Image (cartoon, rainbow, N blue to C red; front, side, top):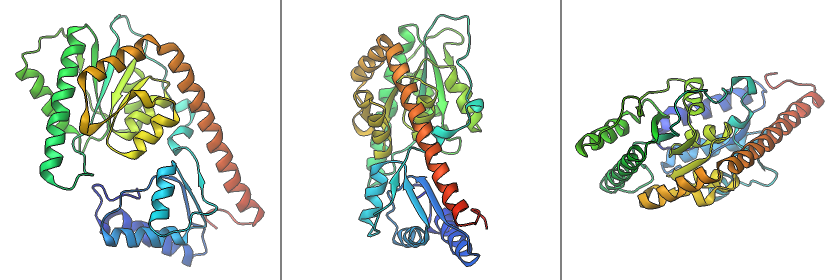
Length: 304
């Protein structure tokens, strides 16, 4: 939320500073817990975010990139902690189990993203996007020809419909023939729906951060087509750096190699990803315990 990708200054950032001011006036504590930060380019957005962060009684970040970004904005981060993304503390009862299915084909989840908004010009953004769709299209063609099943994953219904439409159009132009059910379409309108779709996959190839994160949370082997440092940080922390590609330079042959390597080593990778996810869950429990213990000692609740 502390980024201005698709967020105007008088959108979420204005809401954040208003709520922070009201909270302090009401003598409530303001806490930014395991937040991601950056990029924030608009001067007014930077002003609002810096004001809110300076009012905080507690700050922690979901990765070292975010903490460093805040330091670069001129805010001291001495005493600020780095903890995992809060999604790793989703209740275990909310997490679906892997789907039982009769078909033998391996299901590859393809998570789509429409544009890379880091770039300076619209022309460059569109050129990167066109190459991304062509490369993913060639990858999907290879998957279908090698008898995999493909599940399209839409991590953001508002922004990513275009990517699915453009990818389908590419596949139609390529003359791809496939069996009924070999390509599974679908959009998720909630976290639980996305989790359910992810649970039905064996391996995930995705770009959106929470497609990658939630797949890892479910213990899925993942190839990340990264558009942001937060994706790189997550994959590195999970020990999966070799299964990451930059969205500007996606190579289909490398994608195929990464996929087959994951498939060959899937059991060991699943165990390691699940082990790391459990460590993250425990770390977040420690953070929650520390936060509430501080407030109990002061005799005030978080919404006192």
